[in-house]
Image (tube, rainbow, N blue to C red; front, side, top):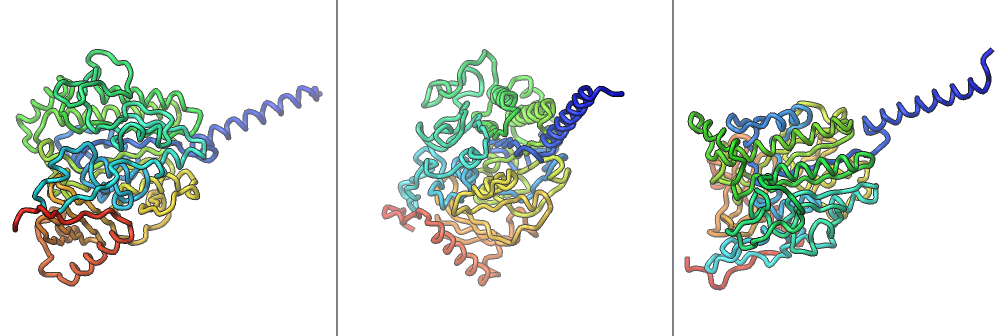
Length: 472
């Protein structure tokens, strides 16, 4: 006869064992705990600068593997052709026009106020205002710990990540490019000749991309037992173009036989980013967090013309053509987002905040007056997104000031200096070579009217005529 006390102890042990297995299963598949988020943002990475987006020159096996494990978007857009406003839209779910943050901060004079230009760019806020709700602030009530590691570039001191809801800030400050990519991260060639003030320590020869990846891995390891939001925002592949010598030498050799790209240093920077992405993915797998972590890979604008070839897209960073605003976007969540899937649906940077809140089942915490929409139905293939129109407002002289509206396959660009309108059918003409504005005047009128209505509804701080404009 079995001892009753022993039977009770055995039963209790079995129940505890089953409960533990259920808890582990719930953690692995997101049933018991909210998903973690790892948002990896690359600076100035062009749409075609990855193997999974068609590059035969750049070597990105880790990012390609990420795409094989998740969904790759072929028509993802940055909210602006430059970094600061796109980052603000990403952080808040709002368009740059609604935020009053349309130009990149710490810009030199000629980019914003050419003395004889036709327009005066708006006197916008030039910072992400503290009253705006960021992703970190929206997730915090659900118990998330958050870290911003890397570039910030959304305002002067007092508007850095810790004032915007992040618990940790490593490497984020006012400026958008590092004085140097090598320790101690300072340069006599820069107007700010000092190391990045929010990064402590380091060692000779240390490379910034590797250091930020190290910091990100440390954050994941330290917070593995609670929901976390990691915003890993690399300075790469932004100028100054600098990379470890052995990688640069590798691509210099490659350029001798492959002339499809321009810069061995830029290619080396991309490989360093790719290696870092692989290390992040391996860390999540090692800690058994990968099944309950949403990984998002994105770029803040198109590739720089002097660093990369954006073909078949027209234009580059600072342009309102596709080369300036179309960017790579990959999202992975095993078991929820189908592996090796693609989407041709146009999406934009301010969709990320509502998407993340939806995936975390925190949609009720969504701030008001958002311009973005949740991509969760699209990612999980549970429903299609309603048809919508996308808009851009970039009244600045980095290249040519203007605004854009995309409705379906048609894209209209309204240039402000000199005034003109261009219309393209992106389904037939991805390279924007055949201007249809003269043959489709009714569509031009309708899309321009739509654009003006959107600007008015957004409460946009508008540009004005320049009384000192050059004579025409």
